[in-house]
Length: 220
Image (cartoon, rainbow, N blue to C red):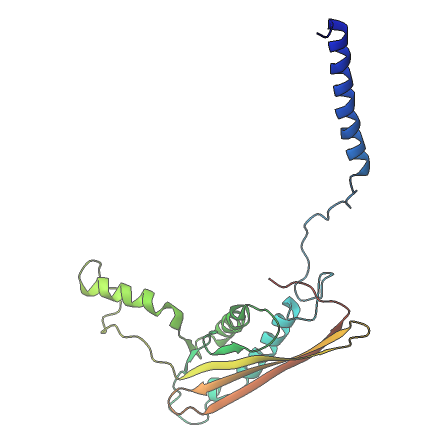
């Protein structure tokens, strides 16, 4: 049997043992750099976190360029012969393909192009939200069933058919130097407007750029 004094010494030894482990762990724990406080940056400029993929400044530059080009196309805004029928256009990512090695949400490109054109068109183009077709059909069904009242329009409700629709693709060409690990990526982004009645490509535009880097970042 241990005496009271021995039991106290054992407890003290165990406590000192765990204290030694705790402080040695704190002493050897890696020191992390202080985190950077979140802050706003200009999306039209290259940021410190950048790679060889498509980034915010590329989306802004390419959609601005395509918008300016479309705005001066006579077929859409300055028809030469009457009647001056307002073109109905579908601009979405349905037929805008990403065949590149870059990860990108295609909607970011087509949404910005469509909203920019819609604001600048001032009634000279009608933009059809084909992705909202099910929403519209559900509303029409409720009206026909008498569940809700008709809107202000007295004409028979009917969905617009499109005259033109955006298509295109994103393509890349990669090259890597196995000795240094440096690599380059060339992007070619093609935009085309297709006549939905004939299949004719009535407008084309492209945006190209090449980036070189030592290592890439992770795009999400």
